[in-house]
Amino acid sequence: MKCDTIIIGTRSSKLALWQADYVAARLREAYPELTVEKRLMTTKGDKILDAPLAKIGGKGLFTKELEQAMLAGEIDLAVHSLKDMPTEVPEGLAIAAITKRADPGDAFVSNRYASLAALPAGAAIGTSSLRRRAQLLHARPDLTIRDLRGNVNTRLAKLDAGEYDAAVLAVAGLKRLGFAERIREVLPQQLLLPAVGQGALAIETRAADAAVRERVAFLADAGTTACARAERAFLARVEGGCQVPVGVYAQPAAAGIAVEAVIASLDGARLYRDRVEGAAADAAALGTELADQLLAAGGLDVLHELGLLLDRQ
Ligand SMILES: NCc1[nH]cc(CCC(=O)O)c1CC(=O)O
Image (tube, rainbow, N blue to C red; front, side, top):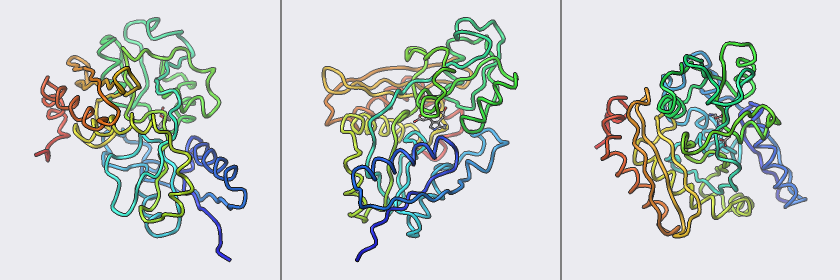
C-alpha cells in the first residue's frame, strides 16, 4: 500500500510553526487517513540576525532552503507568509494555494504610548521594514526610526527591554501568536499600506506533484488569490523583492477589485500613492498598471536612488 504521508517543511520561528501547524491541522481534518509530518529547517534570514534585512538583500531570504528541500524531495510542501515570498517561484515549484487573508494591517505596539499620534517628537520607533520606515516618516518626519530585527517574539522582547518607544508589527503575526492585547492601535491604511500579501499564507509545492496539489486545493481562497495576483504583479513590476519602500493593498470593490499602492523615499519626503479599480479577471494587469503610474510619477527615481533597479531594462 502506498505510504500516505505529507511532510511540511517549516522555519522554526513561533510564527512559522503556528502557520505550519495551522495547515497541518486543516489537512488532518480534511483527510483523517493522511499522516502529516513537520520538518523544521533554518533559512538564511533566520541565521543572519545582526544585519539590517535591507542590507543582507537577496530574494527568498526566508524561503530558499525550504524550496531546495522541496525540489530534493525531502519535504512535500512549505507554508510561507505570502509577504515573504519572492514574486518569482523557482522552476519546478508552484504556489498551490493562497489562504483567506487575515487582517492585513500593521499594528502600533508600545508600553509607553497609546497611539502613533501620542508619540512625542523624536521618539524612537523600531522597525526594519523600509516600507514602514518610509511611510511612518512621511506622516511623522520628527520621529526616529531604529532598526529592529528578529522574529515577532524577539522584537517584542527588545521593545520590552526599553530600547524603543514603540514598534510596528503585522497585526496578523501578533494575533496568531496570541499577542492581540499588545496592539495599541491598528494604523490606518491612509497612513500605512501593507506589504504585498500581508496576512495571507502561501502553500508552495512541487509543480508536478499533482497528488499534493489536489490535497491542498481546498485551502485556496478565490478572493484573496485575485487580490494577491494584483499585489504581486505590482511588486514584480517595481522590483521583485520584499525589501523595497513600497506598500500595496488590493481589496474587493464595486468594479471587482481595487488596488492601492505607494512608493516612497526612505526618508518619507517623497511619496507617490495612487489607486486603480477594475475587473477581478484583470487583477494582474491592474497591479502592473498601478506600478507603471507610480514609477512614472516619481517612484522610478526613488527606486533608482536606492540602487535597487540597476538591472532593470
Ligand atoms: N517580516 C516577517 C513577517 N512575515 C510575516 C509576518 C506576519 C504575518 C503576515 O503578515 O502574514 C511577519 C511579521 C511582521 O512583519 O511583523
